[in-house]
Length: 117
Image 1 (cartoon, rainbow, N blue to C red):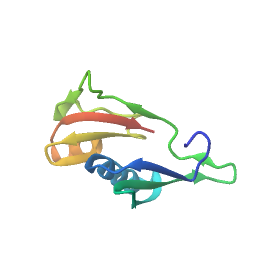
Image 2: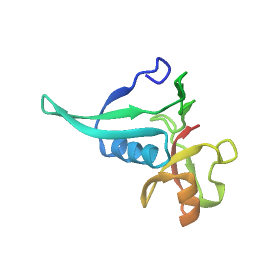
Image 3: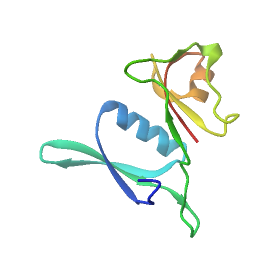
């Protein structure tokens, strides 16, 4: 959706997708998100963010790290750095879903879900 410059994206709402959307909003990668119900199903409507008149996407790349066939975990001292901390890594920890910078601050490790820059 970002590549074809759509303004709104609809995704299924799960606890994980809501947590990731909340992080993306806090970090400034998306404008806003809201819950949406249709036919007894719950969806998230994400409002994507663009820069300038040429509508350059704020999210230039998303790379999934952990997959169902290969989970990737990092200790607190081995947390990933994305583009020298210009991007973020979203992690699932024992304290919830958070960025790599927040996990480093708390001194905890966890599963690396994706990189965003």
